[in-house]
Length: 76
Image 1: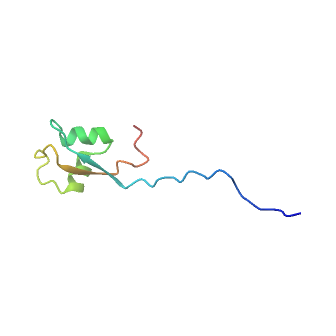
Image 2 (image 1 turned 60 degrees about the vertical axis):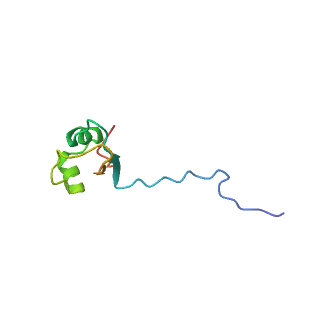
Image 3 (image 1 turned 30 degrees about the vertical axis):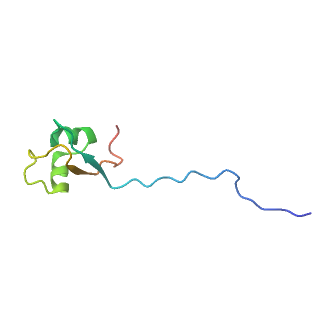
């Protein structure tokens, strides 16, 4: 009798690795403070992460990296 060895017929879903930071496109009326609140991070983290010399001068369409946005501490 031929015995075939197979582990599992249903493939396990592969967890998608989450990046260390989010990328956010600034919208009209946004401030660094608002963006920080939205992502559960700090203004300081965003300012440092993007080397913003003047955090008041962000403009619509600007790409901001949000450091630590996908960290386990943030429960949205």
